[in-house]
Length: 204
Image (cartoon, rainbow, N blue to C red):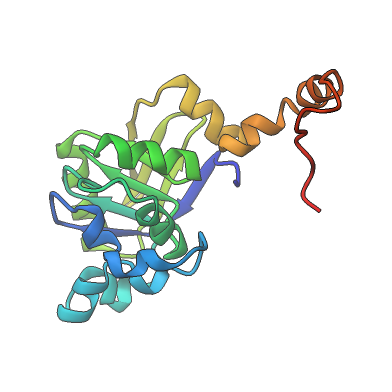
């Protein structure tokens, strides 16, 4: 996966709480066997049935930071929810509370989930609603979110993330990438196995 260091983009304010994974990507889309091509299913019910849904509004076209309400990503543990968000152009989701499994799936795929106090989420909502062109910078190195209030003023809010998850994101390491860091050890192990035992062969 791609490494994440710093990302700057516009933000979409999703003023909804308890957004579950079925709302993020309906189950009908789970029949696909790839990890891409899910953008058309992202929030499909809301985008279809609510003309004024935030992602239908032209001023939020191209947003790459989603600012969501509390309890984002609840429900089933489908990884497709993360893939749909990433296919939809999002690199960061900010919320005051995430479902644990969703957050774990996100960080393993390279989607940064940023936990902020609800008061900071609401302040960010207000800023991007007042000016949808507001640039939001998420710096994983410095562990902070920065955005402008106009008139030369800016707001910087720190966030916490565990060191191991931060390291994996900075290095761009998913589970496969972590394993590939030990390919020499794997080869040495295979070389010492009796010939009659199965071997791990490279893809042909």
